[in-house]
Image (cartoon, rainbow, N blue to C red; front, side, top):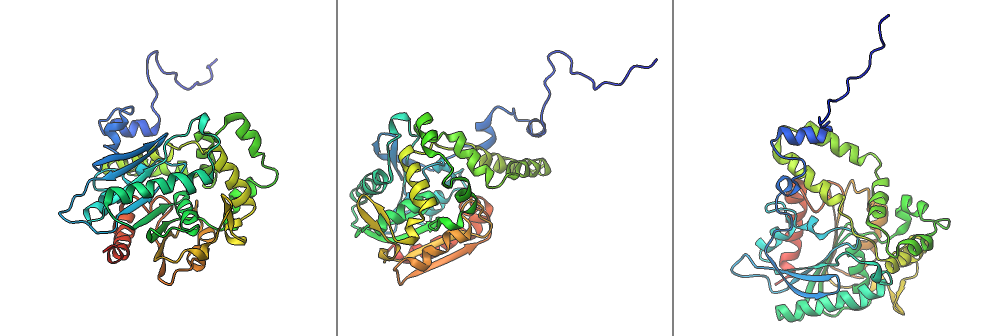
Length: 358
């Protein structure tokens, strides 16, 4: 009697490879040598001019004989690593701005530990961000600066600007949410039945893995699509490297400070206070109409993290007379990094900011 067929078992010591690993080995690169695969990320030359706890303020070294008079401060997200704005040489928004003649500074919030669980919006908007602004002005010798904020960093910049910032000359936001009603998935998930206090009691801050899973839930098949794209372009080494850079960044989240998370859930997602009656921060009411400086909002057509319904109110509600909204092809990450950003967003940002920086 014949025996039923069985799948062959690997011999002892044989390592089974998944498709991504096989792709990397066909390129002659060990799957574990990520530094070699991705290249030197965040490599634009810089100096740390201010540090406080986990926070670092970087100044990127000029690469032109002359720079624009008005310095630029980039405010990054609280839950993502800032190197998405400075991936690798030739694929870096920061490098592009520096080479265009801008004097660029950037806030790196750092990775909060359990002792930082009480940090709130007030700590960031009324203390840490203003301290960085003063450091930039002192270091540059100027009395005004431009601020560029990305995603939650843009929301922090908006709150700061709306509370009164006489040293602000220009404000640029990139994919910045202001209307929580447009964040339907997050709003439904973290509605009245969501117990944020239990989460914070257990962890102090929201764990990075939790943040990552929450973002992935907004596009459930995104990781699978990324792997498929990697395999479809296995013969193109640079495409594979770019895919891996994005993948590394997307899985390199930062814990969400507990105090800020509590306010974001209660006051922003549930209360939608910024577009309702003004968000009270530190006893002061933050109202978008109080922002009157030249303003630009850069958005992505296919943004699943900051949908247009959550961001369109910003340019409509700011009190500026010089204001503009640009909607560009791409997604939330592709807006600021990658080939599409290099061809579309970076030049648009330069064209708008350069004449306002002299």
